[in-house]
Image (cartoon, rainbow, N blue to C red):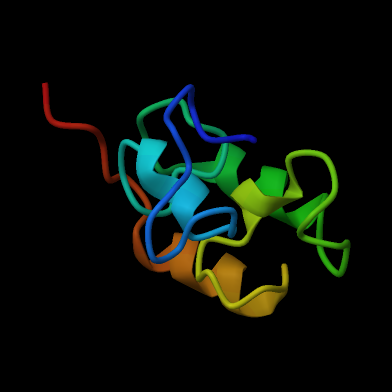
Length: 85
């Protein structure tokens, strides 16, 4: 967990990368189907916190194991991206 109700198995089973399969779009940290200022705020509030605790793993959009400035930059580059309907 969290794995969006899917079985977490395979080559990356039980890792943060396996749990990312439920993301609708890359950079959408708060899972509202759009990349916007709310995602930047979400990540900013979790900077330098452990990825494995709470929902901090969602803020690690670069999947490098840490929540840092690179996550903010990644989201900034994807601002205004939305889910396809």
